[in-house]
Length: 261
Image (tube, rainbow, N blue to C red; front, side, top):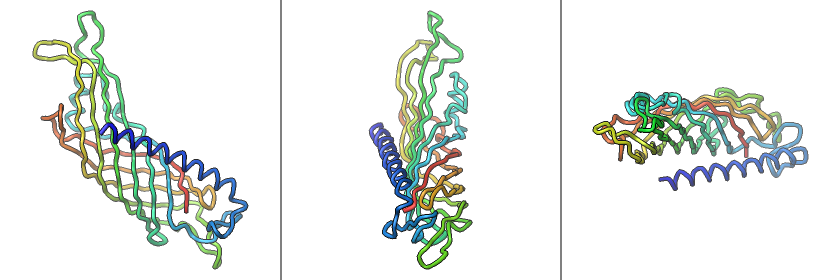
C-alpha cells in the first residue's frame, strides 16, 4: 500500500504540472483563439463547455473521535488537532446538462506528528519519541448540481460564463487509509523501552457532501472555493486490533483552479 500511496502522490503532482501548462497556454492564447477551440475573444466562448478538469488544495479537519485517538492523546503528547492534514485533489467532470455534472475525483492527505510519552522517560531522562502518521486517499464519484447558471447564450455562436456559479453535490466511493506509528514505546508490563512499527490500513466505503462556488477568471478558467465533508470509518487491523473502528470523518476546506474544456 505504500507503493499505491506514493503512486497517487506522483499522479497528483503530474496532473498539477499538466494543468499549469494548460492554464498558461490558454491564458497566453486567449486573445487569438478561434472557433475550433470553442472559445472566443472578449470573455466569451463559441460554445458552452462540455467537461472540466480541476486541481484543488487545502486542509482537512479530521474529527478524530474514536478510541484510538483518545489512546494517543492520553499516552502521548498528541492533540486531536494534530490529525488535521494538508490535502490535494484532482477532479474530472462531465456535463450531463446545463446544471448537472458527473465528477470523478482523487484526493491525498497526510497528517504527521512527532510526540513523546507523557509519563515516562528513559534511564538518562531522555524523552521516549515516536512518529504518528495518518494517510487518506479517497477515490470518489459525485454528482454536482449548480444552483445558479454557469453561463448564458447571447447568440447562436456565443456563450458567456457567469461571474460566479454556486453548486452543491454529493456522492460516494472508496477511501484507502493507513495509520502508522513508529519509534520508541514503553511496555507497561515491565516498563521496558523498545522500538517498533505499528500499522493499520485498508479500504473502506465512504460518502461525502459538498458545496462551493466557481468564480470566473477567464472564459475557460475558474477559481474554485469548496467545502466538503467525508463520512467514513474502518475496522482497525494489524497492530491495532481490539480498538473500535477508526473515525475517518472530516471537513475539507479547499481552493483550486478549474479548466473548462
